[in-house]
Length: 141
Image 1 (cartoon, rainbow, N blue to C red):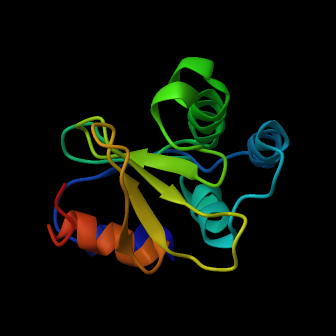
Image 2: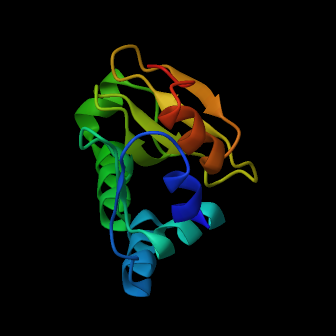
């Protein structure tokens, strides 16, 4: 489903092999919470999707865990930014800004975190719309 959806959108993308179940379990364990269902089904099809210029449209499970954990636990960043604990980072915009889901809430919305001003802006109502809108230029950061 996910690979067909993304393939139908404009722009070249590169799919990775499916994420092993051990990687998904390891990601959830490292984060201390389950991944959102849509993200899990996507990662089971492709453990990461890269855009035309190598930007991470969807990071591999291991990077989702490592980036989110690093941002949540960095003491220096904690003095500069609002807490990252509610955010699950899963992709980058290629300019330092990151995309995130809110795994603790029953809503599939996608937000963009601006690394310059620490704003967190709603950008899409779901992971599928994020991919569509990002690849068609509707989301511009």
